[in-house]
Image (cartoon, rainbow, N blue to C red; front, side, top):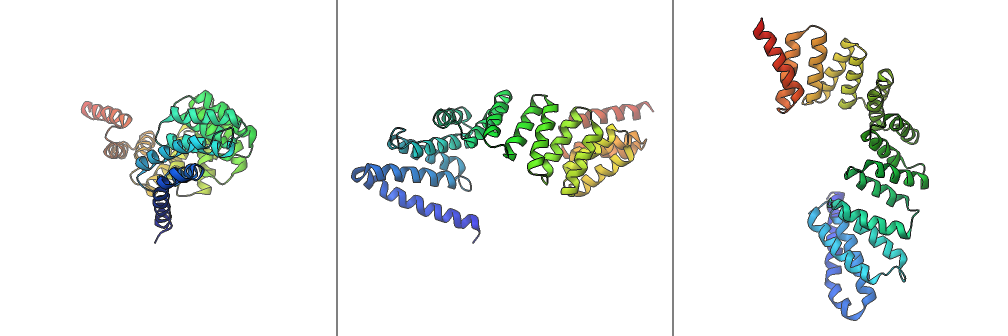
Length: 301
């Protein structure tokens, strides 16, 4: 039996036990009743990670809201805050982002120095496209816990969404300082540098990502794009071919391979590459447009 199945079995058994005693406890012991509801909500929240996500999250919210009535801030501050956090996480997992933010705000009015809450709040703000607020929330998380890799990484990502690429690079630098062997940070750093037209530095970032994870086709594609900007089309072509070798259905690699072949004057092979990109992604507008241009040239000749 897998670890996942074992965990599910344990949670399902616990849920059944809590449900069996809850009605009895409601009459006999309010304190134990609310404790059972809190435990039931926690169990449903964990179960939602592997089974019937929406249904179990709804059950978790029902149980946690019931538990909250028995754990008042005045008498049970720690448990009260724990329940608010779990309600926020449950609503966030259901994409009820505004409700998740509501509960995170309630937590922060009680415990304003909880870096995890600031971090999760930032994620939800980013999901709503409120990137300025998200960055400020990541700033608070980092202020409390400066070695929070995920906060630096996601902060950089949202700075990129705001077009603040210089700051994004610096934020990726901090993430890399904490976790230097994460190829994703190197790739994203390279993308930010590319947006600043610092293609040599971008190339170095992509090469570092490849050094860490040689079979990352995204790094190979972006290395090829950086080489294309540097007008090193033979090397760019080799990078795109390597990406295709790793993941043959990567339409971006096929498209950019076509671009490199076109620059090198190998038009028939370029045409085939663009066709392959469009075959893999029928709504690929760039591939459609360039193929139309090719067909017009062929018809003229």
